[in-house]
Amino acid sequence: MRTSIATVSLSGPLTEKLTAAARAGFDGVEIFENDLLAAPLPPEDIRALCADLGLSIDLYQPMRDIEAVPADVFARNLRRAEHKFRVMRRLGADTLLVCSSVSPLARDDDALAAEQLARLADRAAESGIRVAYEALAWGRHVNTYDHAWRIVEAADHPALGTCLDSFHILARGSGPKDLAGIEDIPGDKIFFLQLADAPKLAMDVLQWSRHYRCFPGQGDLDVAGLLRHVLRAGYRGPLSLEVFNDVFRQAEAGPAAVDALRSLLTLREAVGEANLPAPVVPTGVAFAELVTPDIAPATELLTALGFTRTGRHRGKPVDLWEQGEARILLNTGPAARRDGTVVAAVGLESPDPAGAARRAEALLAPVLPRRRATGDVLLDAVAAPDGTELFFCATDRPGPADWKADFAPTGAEPAACAVRRIDHLALTQPWHQFDEASLFHRGVLGLDAQGSVDVADPYGLLRSRAFSTADGAVRFALGVGPGPADAHDRAQHIALATDDVVAAARRFRAAGGRLLAVPGNYHDDLAARHAFAPGELETYRDLGILYDEDDHGTFLHCYTRTVGRVFFELVQRDGGYRGYGAANTPVRLAAQHDTVGVAAR
Ligand SMILES: O=C(O)c1ccc(O)c(O)c1
Ligand SMILES: [Mg+2]
Image (cartoon, rainbow, N blue to C red; front, side, top):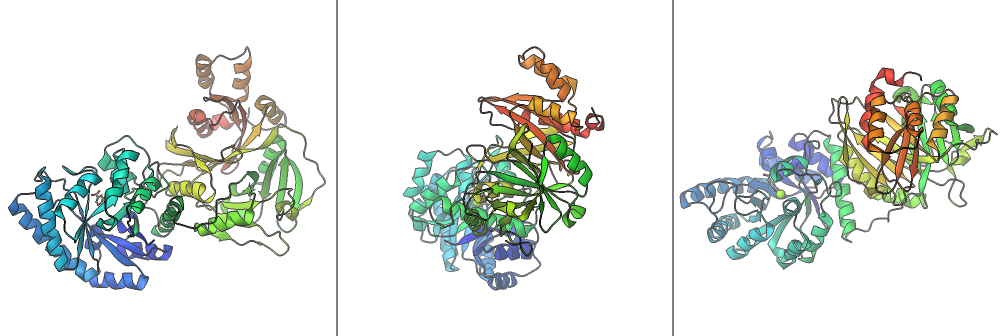
């Protein structure tokens, strides 16, 4: 199945868009008219460039406001069309997209629309061009795919077909019954298929379409379900992405094009049209690796949290700290001097590390060298979109290579302490890579996505979305700020699971650790909303413990101070609570901004 992408989906001048699409591996492009108008190259040169890049020009688009108009207006429209046919001949493009009219001049008259589209198709055919008629969800009279198809069917012209666009169809809330009608369209009359997803947003459909479309798998629409119908109808043309998105317009075209192709790969897999290595769902977090130039504060923090230094890497300045099944690597090597204190890598316990890496590679994730240095254990690893290195590993299991073999034991035994394991990792994404990260964590890692939530920071709104395994053994909470200028909250954190957060927090404080102070107003409000046992709330107030509950259970959590970009959270989930305390995040963020709040208690 051929893959294509509309130039409007990528940033930059036309030549950059084309180069990015070709490099990522697309077979073709839809040329968006404005991109051509703004290009310094004549159509012949664009045609030659596409040929050099190995790209076909699958569609020229859009032509607007053509049909169902008075005769004199239609005569002018045909003149406009003739000009476009000339451009298309010079480009070597043979399909023109015509979208349903939004003009106040258009009449609600299907017979007239059909007659005029047939006349347009006649003229197009003289130039060897086909016309694909698409219903815009906000078209004046024609705004559903079946209405557009009825007009095309009535026109009955070999050079006229329809273009289906998943956004316009799904944005109107079309259910399974409405979609089944797609299979009544003869496959060869579906001249083109445009694919886009979008997050569910309650807003005007035109604004939604022009600003919030995203690649399939990144939003909430059932694009795969729609594609199944289109394929059953017999459509064999390209799968083409047409995404209008404010962020993608600003993001680098190269990575966006790779992300786009990854989306098509997972979509094809979802409809049984791609043979990718199966997802290997991780079963736990083997470790989190911090790089830090500040060895003293990081060591103090880990010690106070109850970790013990149990190993030293045989070849690098990296220490292994353990407590229960929580493992932290502390790396003070060269990367630390470059990046400050950050979460640089995550080890994911994998039932099949090599298989997980094969899937990641098939989905275009950058694969990292398996051996870093002579003598190191061979480890499968890939880079996540934000650059975090993800290791697919085995811990204390017979069979696959054990990453721990790279560490010489210090002889110290981990103390039996409060922390059991890593509960979740909260990683801040670069502002333009949030959707890419969504697709990556779902498609590449095989995690389930929760809905995204907005949380207020004193200096802006953050978006957060969780990705986890069904049993919660692996949890990521990915966050993003509102834009490039708002990199104020780049903190990341590692949440540690405990069965008794009060004991863990007390132990931490007794060992010299500093907990994030939470404003008294927060606890006053908690008292109004929930009933606590006598003294309970005072304990939470004293330790800076926050409280949340969901349909399943309750959540108690508190925070350490921040070293570089990293802090820790202690969490106690009871009764199967599934969230991350998002309701408390604004309070936490404000407290972290408030320097008084992070002072010693
Ligand atoms: O927003 C638009 O105008 C527009 C143009 C062409 C399309 O294919 C489309 O889906 C939307
Ligand atoms: Mg479209």
